[in-house]
Image (cartoon, rainbow, N blue to C red):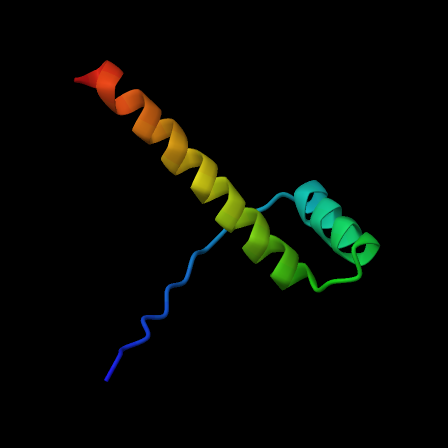
Length: 59
């Protein structure tokens, strides 16, 4: 039986960042939580790529 692990991330936002997310989400006609989740996935993907690119330099 496959296990599904649930991960949670706490993100602290300024009021301006929160308002930006909610306005962008409403423009895209999606929920703020869905928009934020996708934005974090994209950010993590880019961060992982930068870390992979930096690994040979650090070695």
